[in-house]
Every structure is written in structure tokens, then in C-alpha cells.
Amino acid sequence: MPANKKLLILPGDGIGPDVVRETRRVIDWMDRRRTVTFEVQEGLVGGAAIDATGSPCPDTTVEAARVADAVLFGSVGGPKWDSLPFEQRPELGILRLRKDLGLFANLRPAIVLDPLVEASALRPDLVRGLDIMIVRETTGGIYFGEPRGIRTDANGKRVGVDTEVYSEDEIARVARVAFDLARKRSNRLTSVEKANVMQSGRLWRAVVTEVGAAEFPDVELQHMYADNCAMQLASRPKQFDVILGGNLFGDVLSDLAAALTGSLGMLPSATLGAVQPSGKRHALYEPIHGSAPDIAGKGIANPCAQILSFAMLLRLSFGLEEDAKLVETAVERVLAGGLRTADIMAPGMARVGTSVMGEAVLRELDKLTA
Image (cartoon, rainbow, N blue to C red):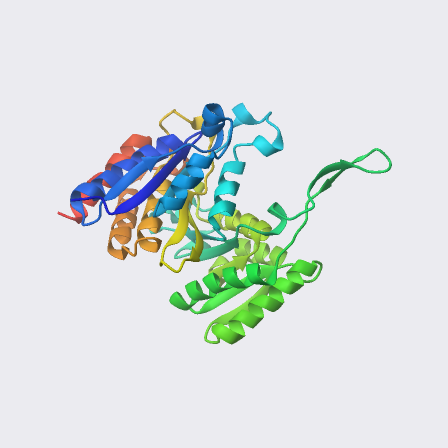
């Protein structure tokens, strides 16, 4: 069967190559067993790209990402590159891809699977059945605003400057993504900002309100200050369904929501661009756990978040809902069977490494399609 989906895979640094390796096995399984096949290309990003090319995201990687149907991203960064100047850091690789491809809407699900209820930092009754989607704007806000940098003031003291800037159009386009997701779920959206102390927050609240009233009147919209949202996530998380935030607040709140699930090693994410006239939409999928350099290459990293990121890719980029659900079900069945990597280990469970967890997912896929 000829390949009909172009994937660019960027393993990156730390545990990125470890967990991507197991996900490649799932992709190969799909090639053999399902109706979709993939033309896979690997590229360089982050510290690996710096070592090879001097850039955290070389032009060749960006161009390969442009022509791909979707990008599967591992992780970047590590102590090896900590001494580099800010403008050369590995983390700038992902920022360039977001900016150059126009990947403005980051989708981070925080789902508590039944086998992992006890792994959460909160009481089981607070998180059982938790299913939150956080939508974070990713190409604007304080991470990109100008002016920025470190300067010296008139007294010879250093001053760090970062600027929070959002335009009306930037807010409206990510709001539409969040409203659309809410409409497909429970018709409830919570938009977060700091309109009480930030001018950008005032504009954020106004534009989200306008988009909701004009285009999504059936979706119930709630506004909440970001600090209050953080408190509510830690005390009554199941009140939320879809949460929308800017780059900074979305970053912080999505990590907090991730902690409720028990492990960053279980959580995927997607970052989407605008739908083009051709119907194509640039998209990048990655686990949110980071590079974890202290365990890189040791064969103990949890590959589930990377595998579940591939499931999101199947669903959102290719519309393969059945295949996406198949992968998600296989992961959940492995966990229900008692296998655990170190990050989600619990009494009475069987501790396994990266490759054994990946092999177990493949066995469940075989059983589900037998």
C-alpha cells in the first residue's frame, strides 16, 4: 500500500529519542495492520540540532515541517546546553516552529484514566472521571512581545523586561478554537486572564465575549481570573470542561492540571495552525513532560504520553477517530493490567521500562484487532 500521510518526526533531546522509538513501533504497526500508511521522515531540533548544525531549529527542519501533513515532536533541552546564550538555547527550536508555521492554539487534555486515579495528588473523589481540555495561545503574549531583554538602568542596575502584547485578531482566532471544542464537548468554556490588573487581560475578556456572543451563542461562557482558576483547579477541578488562556497563563494552568492526573508522563498535546484554503492545517504533537535528561537513555521513561500524542495526531490531523481511539484504548488496557513505569508506579503494580511498556501497547493493539 503506498504511503498517503507525510509525518515529520523530531525526536530531539533527553528522553525524546527513547519515547519516540516506541511510538515509531506503533506507527509501523498501523502501517502493517490498518488502512492508513505513513511516509516518515526524521529531522533535527533542539540540542541535537545545535550539535549538528549550530541552530536549535535549522531551515531544513522548518521546510520539512511545512510540507509534512503533521509533525510528531519529542522533547528538547538539557544541561549540556545550559551555558549557551539565550538566543541559541534548544527551547527556541519549538518556539520557531510555532511561529514559522503559525501554530497558535495548543490543546492540552488533562484526563484521569481509571487505572491511575490513585496516582493523583488529590483525593480520588475529586479527580475520578476528570476530563479537561486546556487551550493555550502559543504565538503571542509575553513570550514573544517586544520590547524584551535585560538592560542597565540609569543607576547601573540590571532590569529584565518582557512585554505582554495581544492583538484583537490573535485573541479571536484562538477563542474560536476553544469555543468550537466546547461545542463538541459539553458547551461550556472558561476563559482566564487578569483583567483586574492587566490591560491585555481587559482586551482578552472583551474579545472572547464578543466572539462568543456573535458566533457561539449556544456555548456557556464563564470568565475567571487566572489565579482563581489555579485555586479552583486544585480544589474542585471537575467544574471545568474547556479552559482558554493566553500563552503565560495557559502554560502555568495546563501544567497544574497535568499534576492532577498523577504524571506528566501520561499527557499528550497538540498545537494547531489555521485551516488553509487547501484544507491543510499545520499541526505539531508532543508530550508535555519535557526532556528529563536525568533519565535519558536509561530505558525507564514512560512512552505513553508520546504514544497518546500520536493518537491525537490521528484524530485531529487525519480524522481517524477509530484509529485514535484504538491506540488510547490499548494504553488504558495496559495500565489496567497493572504495568507501570517508574513515574506512575503504585503498590501491587509491576514496574517496567520504556521498551516493555511499548511492547505491551503493541500486544493490546493486536488483541483489540484480532
